[in-house]
Amino acid sequence: MDKKFDLLSTVEYGGCSAKLPAGLLSEVLSKLPLAKDPKLLVDVDTHDDAGVYKINEETALIFTTDFFPPICSDGYEFGEIAAANALSDVYAMGGTPLLALNLMMFSHELIPLDVFGEILKGGQDKVTEAGALIVGGHTIDDHPPKYGMAVVGTVHPDQLITNAGARPNDILVLTKSIGTGALVSGEKNRLCTPEDYRRALRQMKHLNKHGASMALKYGVRSMTDITGFGLAGHAMKMAEASGVSFRIHTPQIPLLPGAYLVYEKGSIPGATFRNLEFTGKHIHCSRSVDYNMKMLVHDAQTSGGLLMAVNPDHAGILIEELNSIDPEVSAVEIGEVIPESPRRIYFE
Amino acid sequence: MKTLDTKGLKCPQPLIMLKEALLDLKSGEEIRVETDNDTSLKNLLSYLKDQGVEPEVSSAGTVHTLVAPKPDQDIASSNAAIYCTTDLPISYVVCIKGELMGDGDPELGRLLMETFMDNLKLQEQLPTHVVLYNGGVKLAMKDSPVCNSLTELEELGTRIMLCGTCIDHYGLQFDIGVGMISNMVVITETLAAAGHVVTP
Image (spheres, rainbow over the protein chains, first blue to last red):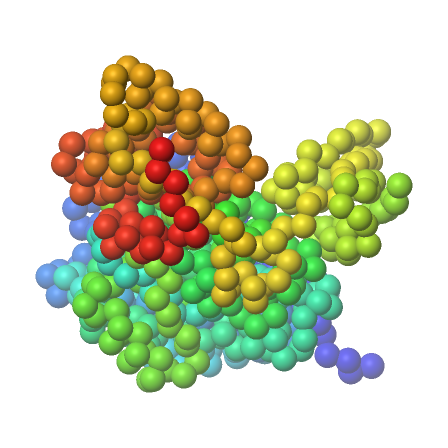
């Protein structure tokens, strides 16, 4: 009886789709006083990826955390994905991760202890790949398990990339394909091939490191990473923070192979419907956008790609260079920034 | 009528079963779905409403029963490959050049424009875009008598496209009630790619 323990058997929701509905979160946060300090370069006000604190003229600290229940069966892979996802918030601000703390909820009575070790190993290896260090952590007994990290990174204050800097005519570039939520759902309901599912896992483990370095190199004005609120939700927050609107060419949005079919078969995760409710009237889909695509742009992503607003003169070269130095990414132009209009995002 | 018993099943199983069952039905034929999961009910309703169907829902205790006709075939979603490469079979764009419809008495021109917009949204085949430029952008302002008609068209999936230069020229940036601010590059592309252009 040494069948490998299946972490997915412990959860109904997984990954970022375990997030509290965005509307509820906003409601709660709106009642709390905002911390204000001149050194606080980015606070929760703009719903950015992380908090940023200016230490001196040369250095600002990026501070972020993320954790969630298992997104896959294997402990090591779960660790890798959770770490890549937590590190991503630092990359999304244009920063370099320095230190990480493990956050673990795990019941040793219900799950073999070696799974605990595998998760930590996966997290550690990913943090090492990012060039950062794990300096400790905290574990409490809880079931189903949850794992993630608090991460500290740095950025030069002048090079900080927030979600509030997009300007009309900027080109929107997305660095990873959409559909991780779809394929996890497809795997659970046996509606996708093992190859397509493996491909989604591989993408989730992939660091947004090169995307961030290209963004810095080409002076990207605004950036965010696509996670639990889906492409539509995160694009909406970025457009809102920047005081602009986005026009997105839906057929140009890269999809993971198999994701469309999973949705066509009806295996649409609850998180997608929650995200759709959240974006509501703030987004508009042309009639040419079919139902499955409208839902896929709301698919909750785990460790998704970066969405950048790039100066039109640099977009082509950035995409070309990023795709050539990092064969795992599939950076493409998906739309452009337009002046602030009654809705935030126009999908066509 | 076929009945799907999805009691005890969680999201997304009921939707998977419904979509599969709908494949075997003829257009307009009805199906009954039973669920005891509130989220699943909500998501089933969201799906069906998006397909233009108003389901009837009745609840007894914790069990909800939903009756709905099979939605009309969604041309765009029936084939992802076709969707990616071609547009809808016949398409047209409505081009609005000014606030008035036709030359002559301005009062009459205003009235005609209102009536035109009221009728446009009732067409079986709706325009893919309504492009508004020069004085036409004023029709998309919050206080315009046709703002509601344009908003309804937008809700139905028509892209309302406003000339950004014109908005700036008339200083209307803060009065926009409906539509996406665009530029002449996109407007030219849209008009050039239209199956035909209707100019009232």
